[in-house]
Image 1 (cartoon, rainbow, N blue to C red):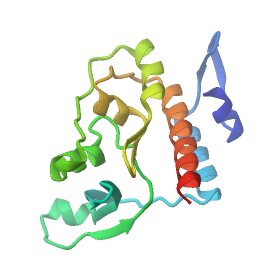
Image 2: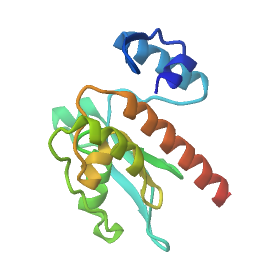
Image 3: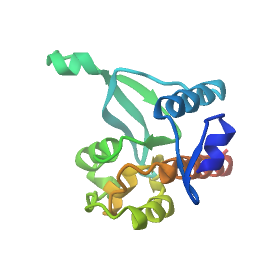
Length: 180
């Protein structure tokens, strides 16, 4: 993962052989900036309320979002629908997008096993290995992977988070090229 951080210009301090420490604010800012420069869009202050479902074949085709403040206030308002050929659940420990898809659309067959207790050294490899497509149109990355597949949690080690993010991006690019 140090390669990814170097690519975006984050300063790394080697703590021990192969273990690096970074300034988290710098890391977040530089990763976000490079992502935006590459065309990513960030929607702040929203909550995924639902997924857009299609059949024949069964798939996730987008998300329904609602402003977080509207949800917190308990005000009824219709969500905004955003269609997408690939939806990525990077919501962390609760795998919120996969959870709502599982709960509201059982025909997708998504089963969330829930993350196991911490075992960082094992989890680092497993999270990257299991990163990918859950069902057509829905992918998981980071700790959402552990929640979906019943893997141990990692704790405050972020190398696999970055590697998982890179892996899901590569898988989506390949899948979208194949379906074009």
